[in-house]
Image 1 (cartoon, rainbow, N blue to C red):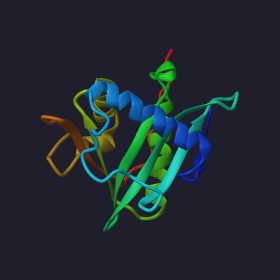
Image 2 (cartoon, rainbow, N blue to C red):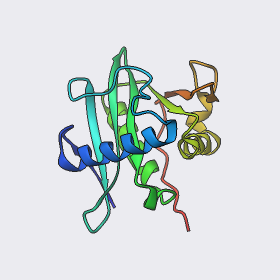
Image 3 (tube, rainbow, N blue to C red):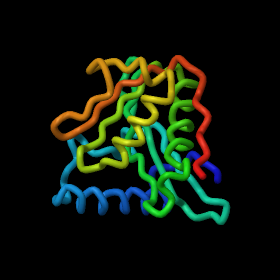
Length: 165
């Protein structure tokens, strides 16, 4: 597996984001469940795609700069057939490292209550990664009426992705 920084309009990035939007529309029963301004090439600072050894694109994620050393994780997605294999963790590590290298101190994320796999992923990170135990903003990782929001400090060594067997 390799994680590559790509342009927003990269063919694989576009395809993965398209798959994510279809899945989100199915889960929420509406094609427009975006809680704010949708990310775009104009406001995404970086975008990564995860590739299997055979070259197939299986995951992605990006960062939107919010200013003052804060970013927002956008369009994190892993193909259903490879969920639970560490792809999401590796994409998240790439995003965290990129942000840290640029002096960003915090990342925010939001995920909806109709995405229990995403909530589970971030909740497991909260339990196993000491850095994520110091969440700020709402005080801790919380599932709200429609979304889970976390505000993560980046002053730590990147976590090592765990292998699943």
